[in-house]
Amino acid sequence: MRFRFCSHCVILSFILIIFGCSKSNPLVTDTPADYYPMHIGNYIIYRMDSLKFINVGSQDTVISYHAKEIVEDSITDNLGRPSYRVTRYLSDTNEISEWVPSIAYMVTPLKGSVEVVENNLRFIKLVTPVQDGISWMGNAYIDTKSDNSPVPYMDGWNYTYANTGLPYNVLAGTIPVTVTVKEADEVSGLGDGSYTQTIYSEEIYGEHIGFIYKRFLYSVYQSPNVQYPQGATIGYGLTFNMVSHN
Image (cartoon, rainbow, N blue to C red; front, side, top):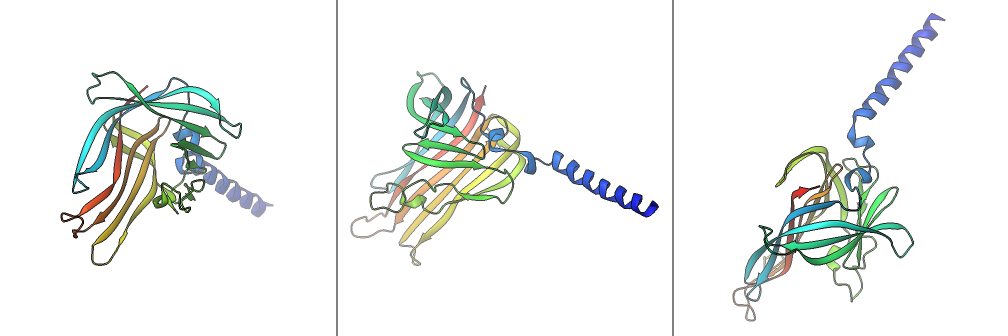
């Protein structure tokens, strides 16, 4: 009887240790809703840097704005699911000029994921569980293979969680609990360097805030030739860095 009692104590202690670790481990308990809260009236202001290639792609320039994204209304998507409309407004980096509407997109929070439809492209931004190493095909709903696809370079992106629960510094300061979604990081082309394609995409979300940082780059470089004596680069880049939120 004493041996049985001791065995039960060992098993009970083991169970308590497991549950105690799980309760204090954000990698296990966090969900997409923790990192993408949606409440009408919430807003986030970012410094938005837009990279463009000019002069037939021989030069690049960065145009900077402040972008204010506001959750403006609750709606339903085309499948009848509860969703939210978010509108992005642009101003200068000193916020002196009037806020001008730029685009609107839709966010659909689901039980195990968060979907975003922007420019008619539906992304799976987050999934359950929010834990390092979890991966999913975030662009699965996007046409990347047809001849008419505007975004063939988004094919096969394998979104993966990293740095879950760690702090991250943005313009607004240090966000204590965040998660990084690594979406794409690829350089391909010809071995002689005459043609190079670069794809990079990463988003960082703050707990109880939403997305706090984003960096995206798509570029295709063609080395100097008869048509482009100085070489040419096409593509674009975007960086969002959170300045403030309510």
